[in-house]
Image (cartoon, rainbow, N blue to C red; front, side, top):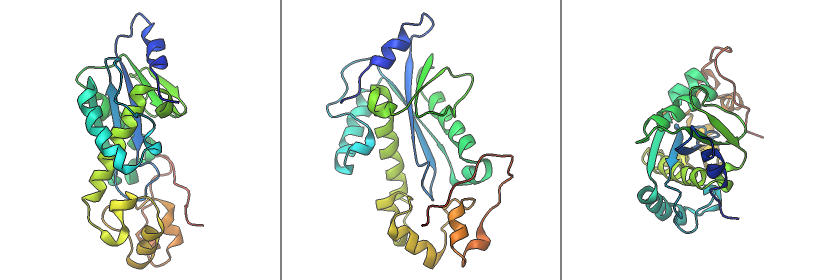
Length: 223
């Protein structure tokens, strides 16, 4: 099913709500690079054809669709948190900062936010409506998911590190990425507080140990 404006219309029935933004992130599960958040405001017009959750689109389709979406949307804001911020603050706080940067980059301040997922990592003062699989249900969240994915993928492709395959895996743990890590160790773009390093005896000494009172850990993805 294609995303609709049902959630947006529901929020707009509130007297104090005139503008709704859809928010989604990409890069949460990657081992390298930033986490990227996009916020999108629309005028409730018909979106470009084929819009859906970015994970359901091929790279060949996502790129052209992102161009259409950027021209169609009433407002687009991006925010990022670097791998250093993720290491220092933990993923939840890094996401919060990236999301607030995205919302603050919009040309208008939204009165309500539709956030994909079941955890509100944005917090006050933004009124947040959580929506599991919101990127498949809401037009504005679906647009944010595509734009965030295309922007972050393009950034990761500029980092080089050909042995790690960032241009193809965007910093996620593909077989090529895992093999290069085991052989060559982490790059300057890797998140060094994450527990994948526990499974790499040769490079384990590089792991950063964050204050346990700040943020949360990352489970190992090596089997």
